[in-house]
Length: 118
Length: 114
Image: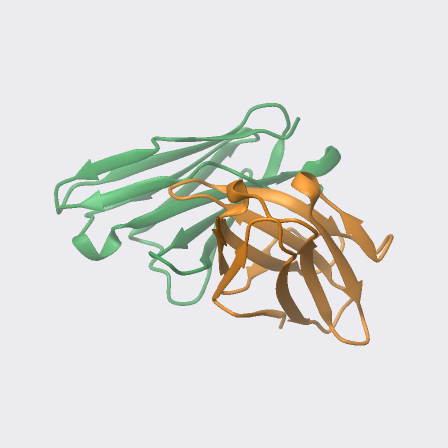
């Protein structure tokens, strides 16, 4: 149980375009989802926390207009990188937490999305 | 605020040798602690977690960790390293029961020598 699916795994986009990343909880209801960013050979940095049906809470220094997060249902959250630039190239990982079983502590992670902006 | 410090960004051991990855935490509330493993270009896989029950926690793939409050530590060990253990390991702390936000350490890259 507690499976989180993240798509796409890899995406290459042109500078100035937008990219949407999806994070789905497959077998539980994710009341909260977290979006992390990971630079090469570095740790994960929390970008934002989203609760189903409400606005996301962004960490300090994260541009909310650039990284749009939508959590419209209990099984889906999306991260849209708007007007992407090369410096947005990174590995993005979502994590989902719910109220059932082992998902309680938000430790079910998606497989990550490697974004490359050219 | 909570924080995690992983001592040693890179650890190298021989196959069959003991693996010891160090993690110290700082928390103003009773912590929930986690160890994750990450293989290249993949997400994180939970190895084990401490959530205020037994202080010695056993996880997957033969790993275990011991919560020591007096030392504010949660070191990860494995008696005998396998080549397949080569990966990046992250220690993380959460902000208490019911909270799910994780604060990660810097990570330790484990290399296994044949």
